[in-house]
Structure formats: structure tokens, C-alpha cells
Length: 211
Image (cartoon, rainbow, N blue to C red; front, top):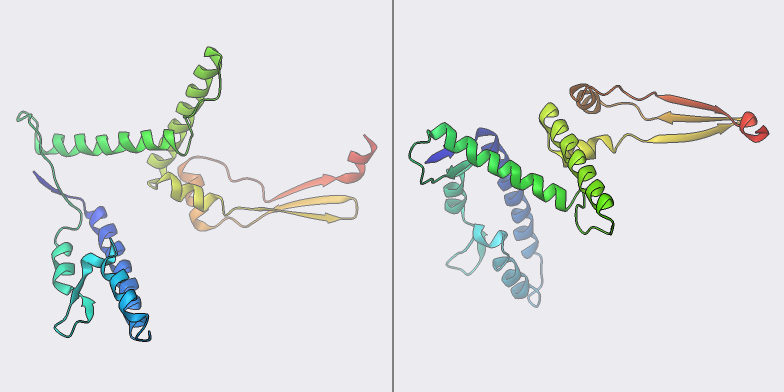
């Protein structure tokens, strides 16, 4: 069964266009190399695991972008070939099943890498169980955030990590001021139903010194 994901097609096209633009820059740089460095640079670029498949050699022995290859890949953007031995499933069921499989595999990768489920440095059974439960709860929060915002967790984390807190001391007072919330940060917080943190925090240092 052949399926097509329009959103994935957009991502595939954008990724390829970025790669081709970079490859054009590399080819332009080859023109400015001296005779000693040029052959080695050509071989390196030709054997590159990513760039190499988009290159061809002209009759004059020069490298250029294989536009026919690029055109062929454009027809495959966002398309997948799915196969199942269960002939009772509908096309929609098969596509949803594979989509869920991808999400499950992604969840396991998140547990093993981002949330560091392993290795476990505990010895007592109750601490090992607590470690696993905390990682599972963290994964649950990650999935809730992804489903509510429609963004991946790395994107959510990257956008929210740009929110910083500056410290200013004036006389006996310390002022903590947060950076302005961007439109994208506000939309993420709103989708996750999380209140925006205060912009200014104030603390009197004189009271702290007397205690």
C-alpha cells in the first residue's frame, strides 16, 4: 500500500532544497582551489554519503548537480510503501498502525536518551522502581506537551529555553527580570495550559541580611 504524508512531503522538500543549496556552495568553492588541492576536494565531495548521490560527472570530468536525480526524489516526497499480512485491515487501519509504531519507537528513544532511563545507578528495588516511574511520568508529560502544541519535544524545549532571567542589584534590593515572552513561547504555554511566569521578581536584601 502506498501512502503519502503532505506534512512529511514539505519537510522532505525543505531538507533537500537546503542540501542542494549547500552543495552548490561546495561546487563553487571547487572552482577557486589550486591544482594541488582540487583533485582531493573533488574525490571527497564525490564520495560524500549525502552529497555524492546528487552529483554526476560531465564529459569534461567536472562535477555538477544531477538534476534528474533531484527530480526523481521529488516524486517520492512524503511517500511510504506499507505492507501487511493481515488482509482484514483497511488501508486507514494499516496507515494508523504504522504511525503508532513510529510514535512508540520514538517514545522508547526518548526514554533511553533524553530521559536517561538507563543506566540505573540504584541498588535497592524501591529506588529502581521509583526511577522508572519518574522517567515514565516525564515521558507522559513530554507526550502531552507534544500533542497539545503539535510540536516535537526538542522544538518545545529549544523555544522555551530562550526564556532567561536577569539579576539586577540596586541598593538593598535585588531585581530579577525575565525576558519578554515571544509569540511562539506564548502559544506553547497557552496550548499546554501553563500560566506565563511573572516578568519581575523582587527581593529586599536588607531583610535577608538581618535574619
